[in-house]
Image 1 (cartoon, helix red, strand yellow):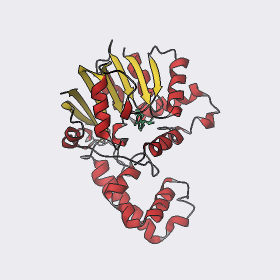
Image 2 (cartoon, rainbow, N blue to C red):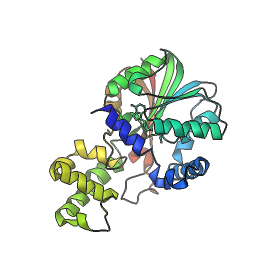
Image 3 (cartoon, protein in one colour):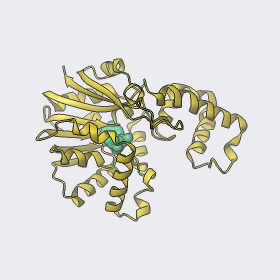
Image 4 (cartoon, rainbow, N blue to C red):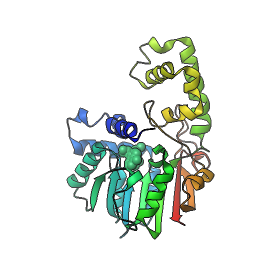
Length: 287
Ligand SMILES: C[S@@+](CC[C@H](N)C(=O)[O-])C[C@H]1O[C@@H](n2cnc3c(N)ncnc32)[C@H](O)[C@@H]1O
């Protein structure tokens, strides 16, 4: 897999943009967009603020990798981080620079670049924070080596990765969505307006037609297209054994799951997030 495909995807579809109607639809009114985006994000994923409250950022030099709209960047700065940011895409870098400037948030710098070649000297940071990013990096071994390099020896890596032992992966994606797509495909419903060629289901059907239904439904392929939309090039799910394998330059210090999310199943109110939540937060230290 080519990193430019991944860059192209995130640049065309900045994380969470369409869920709040898009920046372009607001005719470039960044402030209104950030306000709506943050409300949407923290209403849906309120646990993030609680998780951040439990981390001591104060006075620490923190590199955030994979910025999206910069909502968490703002939260880290407001919690006292001496913050720098890195993202693969020019679009995210522009948006985050705009957020930090509009809201006068003190920070060091925002750089465009890849976690595969982090543009900082060895031992530069007390902490690396990366939420919802590293499961989209195919060459994760190089990524973790780079993160370890730029961390101080006593530094900490905090990541959120998608959880294998989650209702979303085990039931919604592996069973419900695959069976649903199989049914729609076999019924030949792709031409029906309710699904829409441009809508999510329409895109899944187009993907299945392009590569062949059975190949598309194989989990090693289907997972990529079922976390961040049907055009997403790469996604992986993790359990702790897989974290230990992929992040071999680190040891796991603690972990916890959050976020009951398993669309299309209506499960958000179920009190099962610690066992079957979709977001696996892991704190790691260099070995
Ligand atoms: C799913 S979004 C997550 C953004 C944000 N952390 C959040 O939780 O909303 C993934 C972000 O990671 C960035 N990204 C993907 N691959 C990257 C890489 N190799 N190096 C740096 N950033 C990357 C994308 O451009 C995108 O902004």
